[in-house]
Length: 194
Image (tube, rainbow, N blue to C red; front, side, top):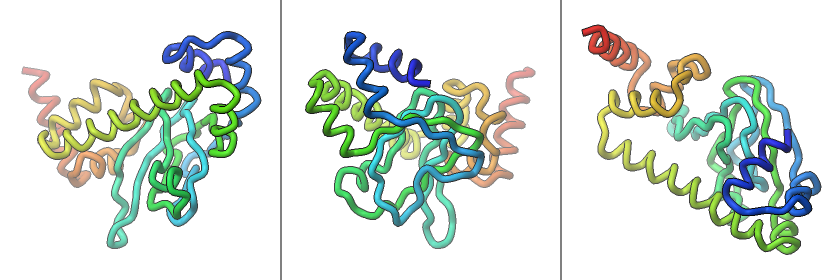
């Protein structure tokens, strides 16, 4: 399991073998069953997790309704940054949509890792930049794209999206009802046939 994370790390920062072995010491592997939570709102998020396999839904609850903020697939980082950074109760839920494996590092271990090997500070900065870039993409998409465009962009990035994620979560993420998403899918299918 750790090999996938090590390979990913090496794409961002040139780490030597002894530096890569620090992953074994500071990270831990966690298996999540479908629908189980990696994080629930109200709890302090004290970790950052790398999705090795599976899918994680990020959502919060507003007025009793679940609002899907993001869906993370393999090779993505997940956390509640506000809770993680400020050591406050989180508002985010991180839930496995399917059986999922993550490798996570707790905040205290991350700080130890940074102290032991400065290259991981560079890695941490680059990882955060990727997460912020993703959040910016989502915000831009929600403010400037129609739901059909958002759906098509999701499919381009994750062609097996609908095999992994229930339609109700995809619809919620792009800001439409499941029925509207069904209509969007029919329009797209009709366009591709013509």
